[in-house]
Image (cartoon, rainbow, N blue to C red):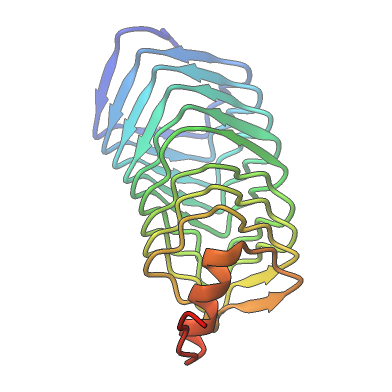
Amino acid sequence: MSADAETHIGETFEGLDWYGEEIGGTRYTDCTFRDVDLTEASTRGAAFESCVFASCRLNASRHQVSSFVACQFRRTSLFDAAFEGCRLTGSSFVDCTMRPMTVRGGQWRGVTLRGAKLTGLDLTGLPLAEADLSESDLTGTVLRDADLSRATLRGATLHDTDLRGASLDGVDLGVARLRGTKIDLDGAIGLAEAMGALVEPA
């Protein structure tokens, strides 16, 4: 596969072995990847828009400043995958393996991670505004300084989750499962208000 300066629109890639491929500068729009092995593959500056990844393997893959906008990941394994400065705005993950996984920077606004197992991940500072994290397991996950504004956390498990410094504007922590959850003063006030308390100065 040629790695650079290609454009693919509406194509289907099925049953291919792209183990260790290097993909840079390629653009995929409305493409479907089905049962494609991308283990240890790397992307740099690649763009995937409105693509579907079904039953693919992205184990130990590495992605730098690439974008996966409005993509769907279904029954796909991202075991030990790493995303650095990548944009995943509006993408959804269904029945995917997502741990362990490394995420550094980037933009994950509006992603759907409903029911995802994200335990123990370090998502420090990650922009997750308007993300759907309902029913997800965030036990032990580090979300310090993350932007969770208007994120949905209904039924999410936040046991021992670190939310210190996170932006929680418009977030209802009262519908999440909390135990040993680490929050700062602002978060504590927001939680108290969500539980019906009237917070007033002494």
